[in-house]
Length: 252
Image (tube, rainbow, N blue to C red; front, side, top):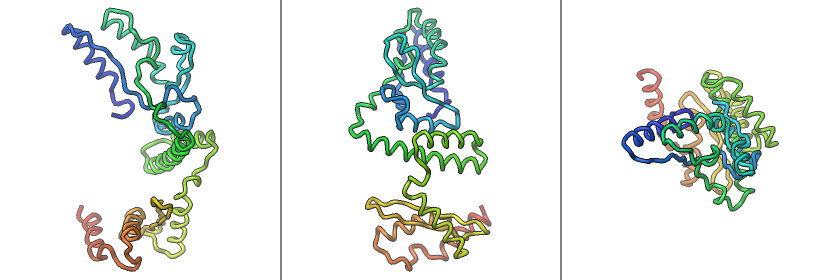
């Protein structure tokens, strides 16, 4: 379940019922991000902020952990804010002083131990922030998120000193859209391009048309490339595509 889905409330409810039945249960959580023992401004932790930009999450140093152990640990605002309340609830449920001295204590996270190449992981995190930027930009255009969400990710990109074009497929996709416009290949004045990078580094593109989205065109082009099929050969008959399109537009 995602953020704000009620994981904590559900767990505390189970804990309550267990104690009512005389079962001395405990509470801990598997916490993936942010990674508590990476630096606050590590690209991986910044990528977490990008992933939750729509709900306004941000990372900070866990003040409770610092006070209890004298060590810095990274956590996020909601966990730190709710910890005093959670501590009181656990004390009320169990009748004893909670074993947790900080919100970081509650989480089980050994992700840092699995990082064997920090350079590769940092690069992947930067790519994820760029991906989130485009996703939120699309969702803003569709009315799903507000402009503040997009602006938050833009600030994170600046913080990482990267730009959208640092993702290799971005420029080819933009060029494909411009090419579609020049060739008047779009649909109802809308011109879209899509691009994908194959395992060998080859970048393929696709354009939208009255029958197909740019991404659909791209998938067919990629299949042709990988299967060694000539570009001029139709992978799917135009009649079949038109029939499916008619079903979606005129019937469904």
